Image 1 (cartoon, rainbow, N blue to C red):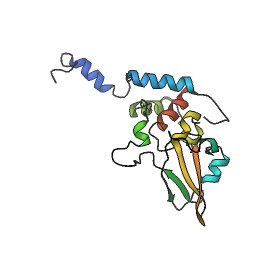
Image 2 (tube, helix red, strand yellow):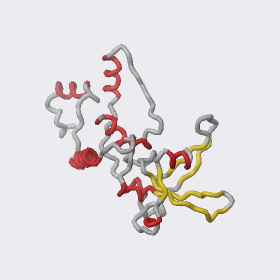
Image 3 (tube, rainbow, N blue to C red):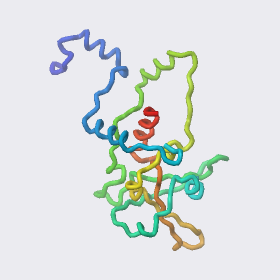
Image 4 (cartoon, rainbow, N blue to C red):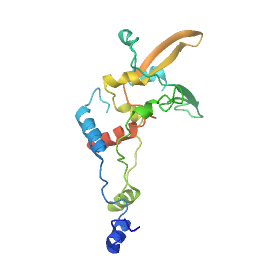
Length: 197
């Protein structure tokens, strides 16, 4: 404790402990760079900051064009169905951005920078709830899918889909046009977009 900057000033130490979660966090140079990159590359396209046909019709994914089929610098995401007793979404597709080809190979999440944490501290949230007489909470439907993905990054979010269950060779390659739930950078992108609007 002797090497602490507060060792000589117990009043400062007490005040700092009392204000946990209220003081601004310093951003690293890497965090500042990512934040600037985000601000410089964001744009509104087609009004968007369940299963495959729905995702395709809503513009969340696209078929990989014929001319891009043989590209070498791509990444394919494994996926699996999650089945639940629900009337709105009985089957949901989950993509695994943390999957590795083998123990030495990096996953997609290993190659992505998660960005600085923009989540409010608990103390901040509690104080905000006490400022006004009413509090509102909302859940945006398919929130991550409402944030578009730059065309240069789409080939890293490819996946294969069986078009015909009766023909196991009838496969189609798709790629995301939106950021996907499960990617390590998605929470940063969504929260930064929300705070910049």
